[in-house]
Image 1 (cartoon, protein in one colour):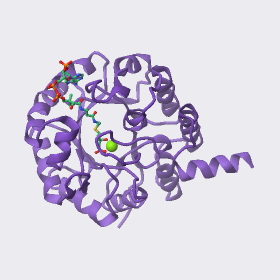
Image 2: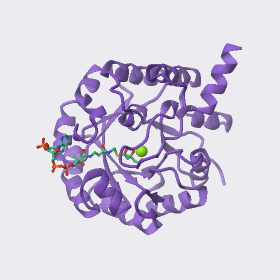
Image 3: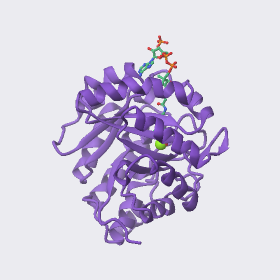
Image 4: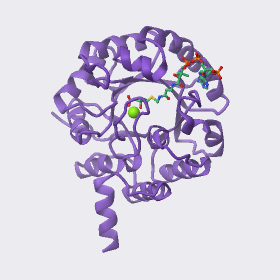
Length: 302
Ligand code: HMG
Ligand code: MG
């Protein structure tokens, strides 16, 4: 077994991270966070989502945030688009990638996007087609790939089924998401292997929430399968409004610390990433939810 020599991280903090904040976060703060992430070397940033502002009020400033970013030519800015209405609004803001988000659990699909898995694919089909026609990359998220807050354990065949459906409609890449962070390494490997039945290794990434403290172990287990792309969230921000109690994604700082310690390249400057995490945590009035960041901040002060 050999680990990948370099890893691509998508920082989902501005979207997955901030979507769950109860207090409104000003668009200017979100823009500054994106600027700090790109200054730290992130080449992929999930900025916002084009969903109903009634469902997720925190993302209502999507167009304002996208318009406020000073873009770098080598950075891909992604946005979530659940349907054509979201895609049409997103298109005006020139995203580099759009994300359709489905689930391996029927109950979660209903709670999160108000339709069945099958209906969601029919909503995603024209979105994927229109994005590809415009030269915009299309990623798909498969939520509840190991467990669901409503249905409990989720079998790997459900992940394989959704991966196949996404592949059929032209989705280029799928993220295997442990929405509520219940997965453990071997279960996560089974879910990734299910997605790998339909996608090449370069077409599959890991998206692990850290509710049960398993996300770093799950990241390592994914690396063992050769997976080299992950969604992570600066300062461990976040959670899903439709998965009560679920905490944020694995902190980007913790993943970068682990990868650099293993000699795996990320292109990210950990110090600047920690500053970005400190910036947003200060704005939210709390400490970064990252063990590595807090340890290194303490060390700096000493
Ligand atoms: P719906 O009610 O089924 O949609 O919602 P509809 O087509 O029947 O429209 C109803 C109303 O919503 C209408 O407004 C539409 O205009 C509006 P009204 O006439 O009542 O004033 N609407 C929209 N507005 C703005 N943007 C849109 C849009 N579409 C309809 N795109 C919908 C369906 C998907 C929109 C809704 O269920 C929704 O917004 N859900 C929010 C889902 C969400 O953002 N969840 C969190 C992100 S996913 C996540 O975090 C998981 C992930 O991180 C991976 C993981 O960890 O698992 C990706
Ligand atoms: Mg998520």
